[in-house]
Amino acid sequence: MAIEKVKAYFAQYGMEHRVLELEASSATVELAALALGCEPCRIAKTLSLFAGV
Image (tube, rainbow, N blue to C red; front, side, top):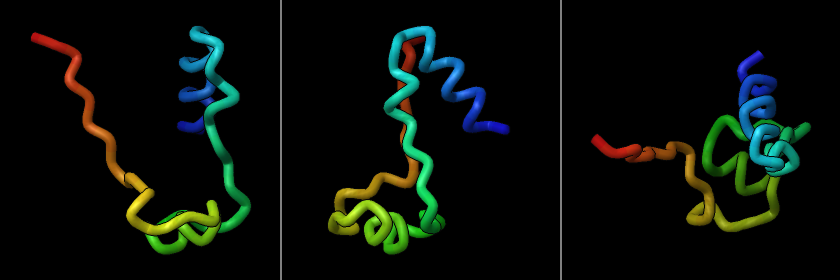
């Protein structure tokens, strides 16, 4: 399971508690906002990170 890999990676830094598993669907921005009780503009569905060259 991918989420288990993320939790294991975050555990190295003491951050595994930051991974949220929702019972409600978060498949779209709208559904994620409903599940979290926030505005859709607060949802990021994609993150891009630059690690340097």
